[in-house]
Length: 232
Image (cartoon, rainbow, N blue to C red; front, side, top):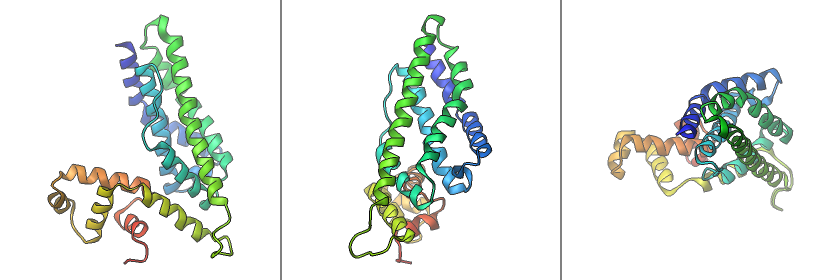
């Protein structure tokens, strides 16, 4: 019971952790908070790292969330396009861990005294695994995006790299997410989309949210432009 309560407390502290994290990045002048779209991607990764730590605290061992590798590799490619060096992601991981310290200590206090050391070590190990996995895959994506373009493209062009990153994002979309984006493109409302596919509006919104995240989009228009480039 103690670990469950501790995990719930850590999850509840996530918004506060993220605010402390963002403020610290701002003090360092990190480009990860220089634009809202870049910060949104950074925040998403941080929230998921905290979620994995909370899950490990509850279960006693770390388990990676599904889709982490693909998303992190895609994000690494975007970082090259955004001209953000890998070193910023490494520093951000250190900043996040520091931002979590108070919340982790308060959560661990909910665990019986004789289990607190083990609980702290579990969270620490989970953080290293979660952050390390994302950094590794992000660096892979960054390096892959740095490779010379195909023979047909003689010059390195940021727009080409951006298109390649968007193409990777499209590959991550599920069939249902693509179908719903097609319906959005056709001008259907969430309610009508739900009727077409016999699903609830809430489910439609969830699929759209997932699609936006994968595409790095913040609106329907931006998502459609990325999903259907040049198809007005």
